Length: 159
Image 1 (cartoon, rainbow, N blue to C red):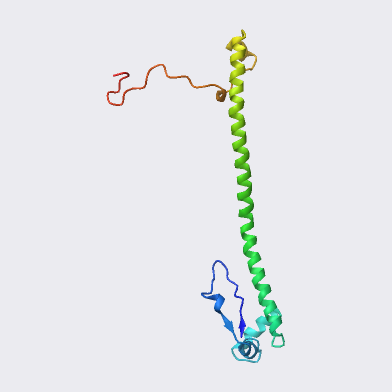
Image 2: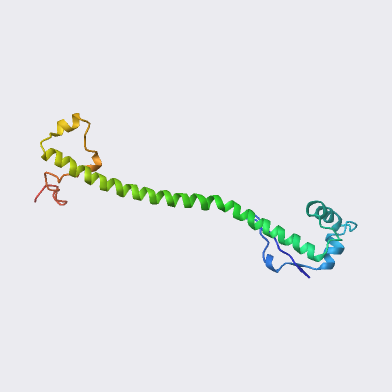
């Protein structure tokens, strides 16, 4: 009895494929017999596509089946490899972006400190702006609101 290695594709599967078996006699006398009324066309396809004939030994047929199974597995792996590559690249870029965002935050703090030092050193904001030394918006802190937030019940501040 020959255990068949059944190739399945995402759109076509054979239920219980791992249990499929075909006897040597059925292969020899039916599937690979070009003179058989129903098996003849199958035999011609096996001979033309896979090079398997009645003269092919059981070991050679197993080798063919293993190669088909290996090729099918490799084809499945090949279809998922671009996804693996893209996800890996995405992860790398996300890590780089996070590092850059941290660096930008740290630099914004440093710029703000240096800008305030320039102001404390006698420069005016207008002078710094005319020298194209404006502080980027990310380097400035938001000021506290001049008015306390409105009370949710009355809509008025401080009540």
